[in-house]
Image (tube, rainbow, N blue to C red; front, side, top):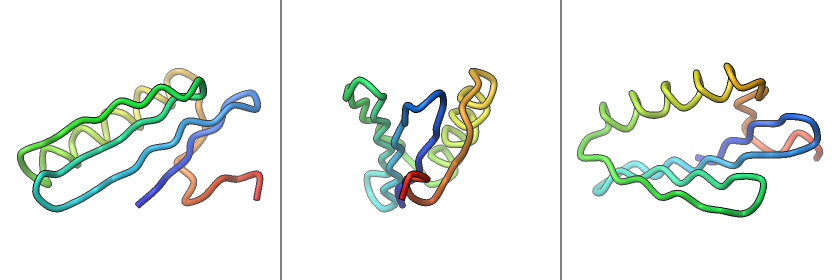
Length: 70
């Protein structure tokens, strides 16, 4: 699944890759990608919730299932 967060005309993309290994890729507005691997789907889900909370606290809107500009 791919999700987007928006703030002031910028976008952060988050990709969730379930399966082994469970991965989450976060691409910041400047194009920097952070790839995380998690040992279980529960760990990945907890990390996803933490990321959503942090982005919301930092003023980001989302998650959107696709780029909201489209």
